[in-house]
Picture 1: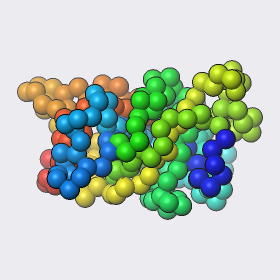
Picture 2 (picture 1 turned 45 degrees about the horizontal axis):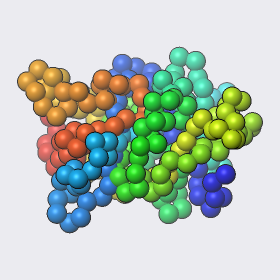
Picture 3 (picture 1 turned 180 degrees about the vertical axis):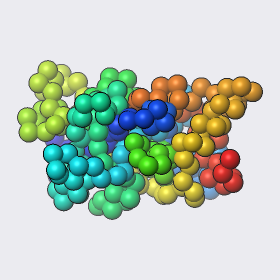
Picture 4 (picture 1 turned 45 degrees about the vertical axis):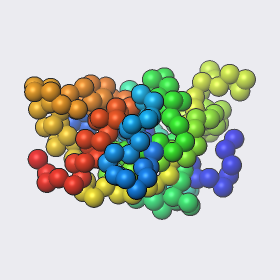
Length: 244
């Protein structure tokens, strides 16, 4: 069980439209003073940047506002909705402003029930950066940056029979699911919409460029995705550029 002083920030995303399916994962640790854009691309292992998706907008489930209910309990729940889910199978209304509002601006990213997404989280290291991606909303895209502040550990929700993430097949002596803790770092200087990222992806596929194979479009339905240093730096630099 995680310490009760840490708010639970369950994150998951849905993909209801083609564009929402075109999303990504990235992150990396904060850089020194040199160049916020050059971060630690030089010495990090191959997977050292991430993109993690979550839904920022309220949605009603059985006449209950999911987001309001979540915020009132300080527990951010995922809901299974037929026809409205990522390959991870879970959905949550939780935006970057919600993470910013938590104690210490920190929470645990629990509820992941996809093996590939889980394995990516198990590769995350303390201090790496992740883009916070708003998914399944009016304008999906990258809203800000967060830092991995605790490496993968047991996701307690898999053992809680009252939790929507309960997994009867997971055993305490051999838990199947993990989570990490994340901390808000900052908002992007400008919101980077999916539509703009897709334009760059298509350009780079045709002519070559950092985003030609970016997971946001090649492994679109994963809610936790890796970014190469080149992909991360290119996307980060877009915040200083005029929209395409």
